[in-house]
Amino acid sequence: MPAYEHILQTYGSLAAKTGQMLDAARNSDWERLIELEQDCRVIAETLKRVEHGVTGPDTAYLERKAELIHKVLADDAAIRQFTEPRMTHLATYLGSAQQENRLRQAYETDHGS
Image (cartoon, rainbow, N blue to C red; front, side, top):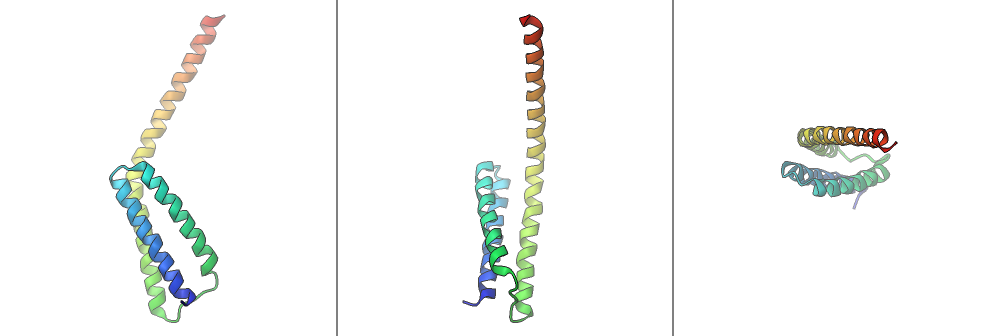
C-alpha cells in the first residue's frame, strides 16, 4: 500500500474516533470520552511519524485529507460544547471543596490550641 493511502486511512481512523468521542460527549460518558481521547493521541502520533514528507499523487488526495481534517476539527468544536460546561462545573466544585478544606483547617487550628 502506498504511503499516501496509509495516511488517508489513518486520518479516516482519526475522524471515526472523533465521531465516537462526540457521541460519548453527547451521552455524558466521560470515561469513554477519555479512553477515546487516548486512542486519538496514539493515532495522531502515528500520523506525525508516517506523514512527514509524504505527498499524494494528485489533488484528490489533498482534498480527501482536507475533508478528514475538517471533520476532526468540527467534531472537536462540537465536543467542546459538551465538555466546557462540565469542566466549568468541576472547577467550581473543586474550588468550593478547596475553600471548605481551608475553612476546616482554619477552624481546627483556632480550636485546637
